[in-house]
Image 1 (cartoon, helix red, strand yellow):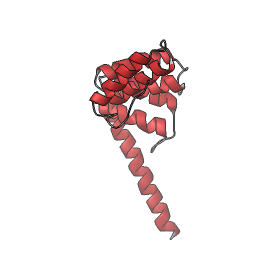
Image 2: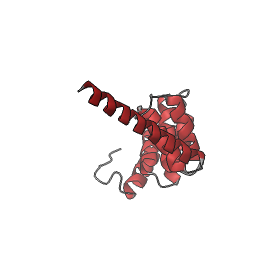
Image 3: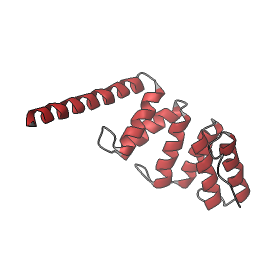
Length: 147
């Protein structure tokens, strides 16, 4: 039984390592979805040791490469101060970039920044504007927004 368990652990570990290496190769080859996936993996500690600094590196590459979700997730890292110094203004810029690219979570997060006055002046009308933009994309279709 111990041998079977050991073999299973070795197989899973080997598959995980190969999976990460495949994503790294994709990212190195300019496939931004690979960079984005690596960012998620490092931010969550999925198949790799959690490392916010590496997550920031891969989200940055994905965002710069046109992946709107990379911009949103990088914005979250700046918003929360994970792997970088907390910077709400930088988070707003990244959420704006994501929202401009049609990424619903970026629009929603941008709305929250305006609602809470983080990185921007508090502005309920702007908050509603960005929540509505996310809703128009279908993200918040069941949410009633009251200001």
